[in-house]
Image (cartoon, rainbow, N blue to C red; front, top):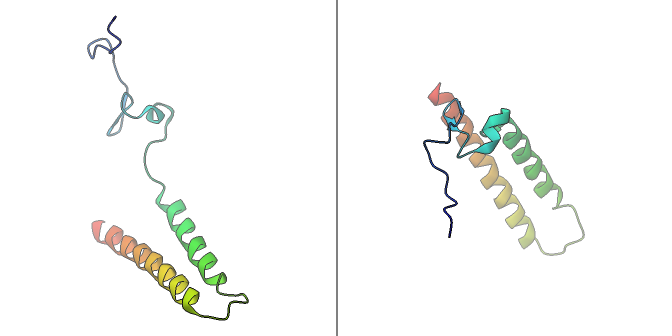
Length: 89
């Protein structure tokens, strides 16, 4: 069978910052990494959604305990992330 592997000497990857485009193809067109602002917005939206799910016609409140618990867990993760990012500055 013919060799299908790329020869590293023939491949001249463009290095964008700390990311090699051979490993992360999206770095070639300018995006490679995380979006912390979008993650925070999504986390807050999930917290609001979980708390809004408490409004309803359920008779027992076991569901509410789980919804509040998961919302609190996400809030703790978001606060911890903010504190660690401020400490890194």
